Image 1 (cartoon, rainbow, N blue to C red):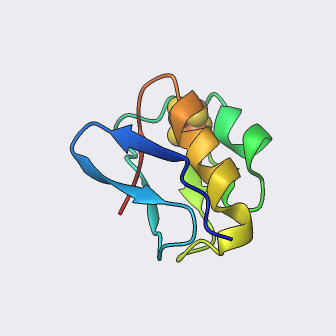
Image 2: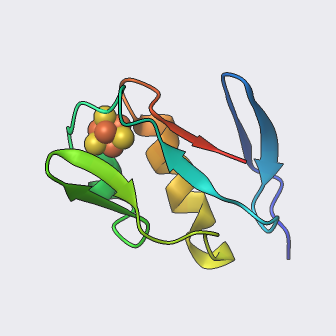
Length: 81
Ligand code: SF4
């Protein structure tokens, strides 16, 4: 079943869980707080104090937590398309 929960990130078009989704971390914005890795370790990993996306496109089973991680990023460094 496709969920209707969705999120809007600044200039990124809203996508819904179940759609093809690729995530990106803006390395210039990331402050290495680790929140995204804590929320969604399947997708985000801290390397040298910067978050990296280790799984693209993000499988449906991890999309919601990846979106939550993006929503929880204090500097809005995470986007998806
Ligand atoms: S939550 Fe944002 S600032 Fe913190 S590590 Fe992840 S991408 Fe970087």
